[in-house]
Image (cartoon, rainbow, N blue to C red; front, side, top):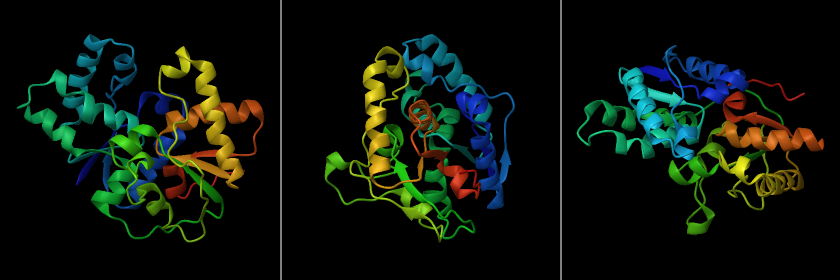
Length: 250
């Protein structure tokens, strides 16, 4: 199968190591991965701001670029959700190219867990890790069980991390609470956004985590900013960096 690697614009600009770790992880599993150089933003920031005309242009561009691939894989749940859940209004329901893209795009953990169904990882990560479950991934993509539904607990992120022999996953008191980032919410309501982020950081520290991880670098970016500003003893890493064997904890 041929995989089109979709790298969100902010990851490309601010966290290129996450994009490279995603590529490394997929290539370690012997997949044929292509990064289309002409790709741009999925349109999520414009959608959050009500700029629907701009979103429509980007949606059609996205589909044109990624329709040749068997699968589209991205290291971010929110951008994948944007394509799967919010592009429909810009395409006819019988548009074959859009339906193909919609059904073949996956967040990388979702892809590894549900499609590839990997059973082992030959990497080491001897640290105490707390998993931050982002709202889009947890509730829209089904990466985990939302606590408000009172259903049996499951977590695809935890299942993947558990394949690492020497990792220790800590138990959080509120494992799927929002971090407060919310895209433009952190700009329009900064005080509430920061307070929510501080709560998530405190939960990780109270649980003894040395590393905070998750599937959305946007949420992690928000909390990393608070951690750095307040000098908290907590490292932030995207989950693909851990799964790919990148140990830049120090």
